Image (cartoon, rainbow, N blue to C red):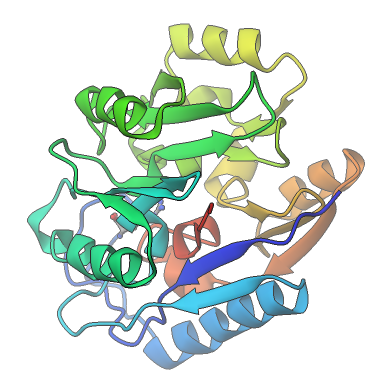
Length: 269
Ligand code: ARG
């Protein structure tokens, strides 16, 4: 069953590929900012049409990746665990997110450890009584996994990412509802694959083509699965599993190494 969600987004007003901090970014590829904005508005409207609440951050010049709002914090049960970005180019984004949470009455915890928010953390309220999955290997440190567990009081399972194309957990694994995940096994170490198989025996395992099309970088409300329109194979997989795929075209934002999920932070009160 779908559940109404509250999301935080940031329009790509200053979006650009000015530096390359993941293998998808190529500073010589031209970016069409107007098209990026148009596609982003389409994403926002899609979430509103599904009945969800959308909050917006004010974009800031000089922060071209701010559109990837998922990276600014991770929220569970009304607490927001702030981000501390790996690369200096994105560091100031954390303050913009912090200001939002503090202004909206959240208990906001400023982290000591390097982590990129919902890029590398996800929460499954219906799995094992409430489980946090956390990625490491490229951006978020394992020390941040321990810190998040202390701050949020939920068990955190660390998963090691091994393929640089899937540098954030949200490019390699996605919750489809409160207890079900889909993931691309090739993005994880052998041991982490075993951990996932043990925790989620009924998971949907997707292939490399679906993962490369950013098919796992999705946002689900438990029924509607909003995903990149290029990910046609993934749309078929989720439909087979009984969910309703809702494709959106985010071709411009893919040039920065992100898609639907990267642009959408979920606020869990
Ligand atoms: N250019 C951004 C970076 O490399 C993309 C972030 C994508 N966000 C995500 N949640 N995966 O940091």
